[in-house]
Length: 426
Image 1 (spheres, one colour):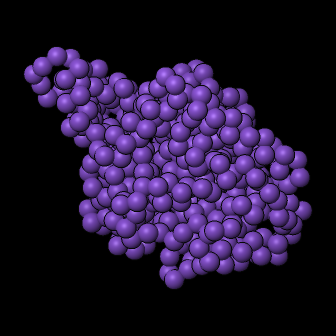
Image 2 (image 1 turned 180 degrees about the vertical axis):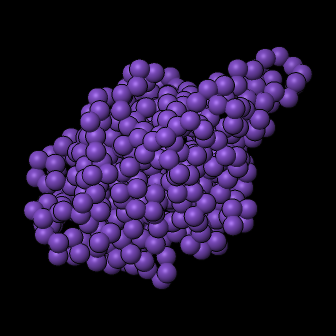
């Protein structure tokens, strides 16, 4: 199964034989941009084809301490850049629900590992929806934590101010159990916070939504596929039947979120990926010529087309004369998005929307039009701009394909969204 679906870049079992903890007996797939000591970490790129980190990421140390067995490094879009896991240098991953379709991305290998039963749990990373998107397309649960709840030490950076490591599982409670293990402050990551010290996210998965107020942003429902909207509204009706109250809200700023997100993400990517030049990191071809020519050849051969596109656009946005025109405006839009969410959470406990506005696409059909692919992130990227927590939980199926429901909470409101998501399962 794993070979047919191309779930793993590297399959190898790793465990701490002496560890005995909450994840004892559980198998975990780890996205291939999270450092694992002695185990190849490629980021889905030919640039890092042979890279073996000398240390574990903090989340990997947490897994080992909790008794988990790592079963492999999961396939991903190259450096996290993509929404279908088709930009990997190691070939696309196929969706276990329908192998002719994409599993979503960029953590498609991690979601597919859980959906196919190749791992009990998985870790992905979410920069603009890369945990929630594949969770929705593969019919599993994915959590994007609040920025600072989980250490990013050992994560190969794509866009530092946006990305978080998050868990996948078949059920909300299992995903919450994994979040309990990996969350908390870390002296190696100054952005982490103390809010998770006494966490019991798994305990919050009790399905009690009586009296919960759920806001539905009209801007995140309009324009979605009718089949997705029908399934989404059916799940909302189930929440209402269990005692939740739903109401429409407006987030005017989210109409500008995709543009702002890609300017910021690409700008940070152009800076972060500068280190991959064949000397400091990445493969060196032993090229002739001066250092500039050698660097250029290494990057030409090591990076795929989507990575090159984003580096070029990010470099342009940051260049002299265009910084204020693009990057500064994007940061202004980001602040507006955050203010809009803060205002909404003064009226409701959580926000709900379809996770993805479309059903899982067939492999290959979205690669020729990158702009349309970027626009499918419209419901997920606002959460990353505002550094909020969100969860994608299966809401049902349409034409045999899974549809995800996204629940968004205020900062460090993980327990509330987990409680609401567990009610969707019932």
